[in-house]
Every structure is written in structure tokens, then in C-alpha cells.
Image 1 (cartoon, one colour):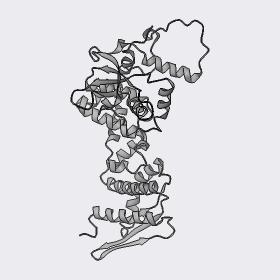
Image 2 (cartoon, helix red, strand yellow):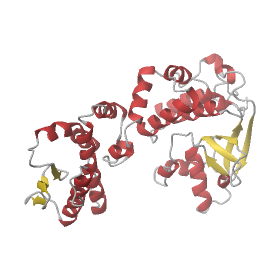
Image 3 (cartoon, one colour):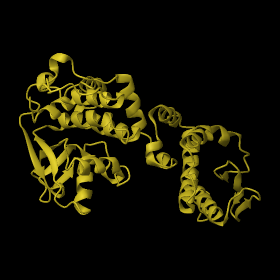
Image 4 (tube, one colour):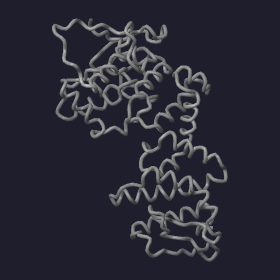
Length: 358
């Protein structure tokens, strides 16, 4: 039996993540001879494809009113703002496998899902599911494959149905970080579910407790996230502990100050071409910051540490005559790091109302 155009969209909008039961699967046409047994990886891939080939039986009536498949110029298609995946994070490296697959197969085989738009003179459609496919086809057209077309199924979806469809596709994607998904959920909670967490959990068929943790992580400020080498390093379980610690009004300033120091250290390491501070170390320093700040001597309001935890610069006193700073020998900090340490120190003192301009 030929593959229906609507099957792929239907499988995404249904709540099936595993293989469909036998009654919901499409039966393939008889093969002339038995095929050799597939390797385990191929069988697993086949199971996933069977799940995506599920019929429209579990699709709520009226959610999809029309499905049409087209070949589109990706330049005329934008990315829907409600998608968790950030287009800016896509590049040739993390799309290389998909690019190679499209070339080997002579084109895009699995269609994306788009919907028509009317409010943008530069674009006719927006991608609901298939951001990586859109980026890869765009890259191929700009790199010797100008005849490649973006294959998409056009569906009429409201924003809530579009969000659920995009979420189902992104759940299986390792390159969509926990932080991206968390912030996407937080935006959707207000936009589509009237801030009713229970209703959102029911519609997405997710645990309310798990979803609540995701929303909590979404609230971590960018200034704290900047302490990590990449937003992708922010994983749900450890980030939830950090979000809880930030609820303590006494602890939050110390965590924020340490995050600022870490962000500066990460920038200096990137400039030097050195390895970034690992996420586990970043998290430990952030969570330990309130205790360290509480035990620090009163006469030392600020200490700038290297990535190895060694003090490189310490503020010894701040008064009307000026600021006394000590540079520590043996810290391992070079001239660039010390310059960064001095800038960070002055910015910190300024935020505390103890800067030179008083």
C-alpha cells in the first residue's frame, strides 16, 4: 500500500512514541522473497518509522483540516517562533549527517510540516516541524545543489496544535537542549494554556511534576546561564537544584556574583583557545557560592579565582581614598586573565555601590 501523505503528520500529532500496535500499522506489499534479517540498529529504526507511519485514528477531530505536500524554495519559508529549536544554533557540523543523507538519497525523503502564512511579504510558509531539514536544504542550495527543494506537508493548524506537533518531534532530538525545551514550555504555558499547568500536562501527555520542573528551570536568568560554556550544558536535574537555590533571597546575590566571575573566565578561555570550565564544576561553584561568601573574611569583599579555584585578585579594602587590590603570585593567571579579573572586580564593586565613581 502506498504511503499516505497525511501519515507522517498524523503520527506526530498522535501520542504514540513507540511502534504502533498491529491494528494501526500499514501492511507492506508482499515481497518476492524474504529479506535477510536486519541488524538491531535497523530494526530499531524500523520501529521508529512504524510509529511515524501511524494512521489518523487517534487524531482529534478538526485539528488538521487539510494536508498537502509541496516542493518549496526554503528561502520562502521561515521558522515558526513557537519552535523550541533555535535556528541560530544549527550549522554544517551538527547537520552534517542529515546533509550527507539527503545527498545520498537524491533529495529530502521525510517531509517537514509547514503552515501557510499571510502576514509576511518575504515568506509564504513557516516550519512547524523540520527545522534541521529546512536548514540542511538551504545549505545544500547554497553549496552546489541549487536544484534541491524543501519537501513539506502543508497543514492547517492552530498555534496549540502546532506547538504539540513541534514538541513531539523535538522530544526525540538530542540536539534540542533541556534549557531550550524548558523555555519553550514556559512560553507555551502562557500562550496556549492560560498558565494552567495541569491542562498543559494533560494535552502533552507529560507528568505534571516533570513539567513543573522544566518550567522552574526556564526561569533561570541569562546572567546565570552565561556561567556555563554553552546553554546545552544546562541539564534538567542539576539545573532544577540551581533554580531552587536561587529562590533563597540571601543566597541568590552570591550565586549571581559567582556566575559573573565564571562567565568572565569562560570568555577568557575561549579567547585563549583553551578548554571551557566543565558544567559539573560550574554547577558546584554556583551552589557553593553562598557558603563561600558567608565564610569569606569581612575585609575581603571580593576575590577573583582562576578556573582551578586559586585566588588571582583580592580586594583588601574599599574606602573614600580608593580601592586596595592584591594580586596573588602563583595563581597561574596570565596578563590577559589579570586584566579580565581587574575589569570584573571594578564592575562588581560598582554594582555593590562601592565603585570609584561615588
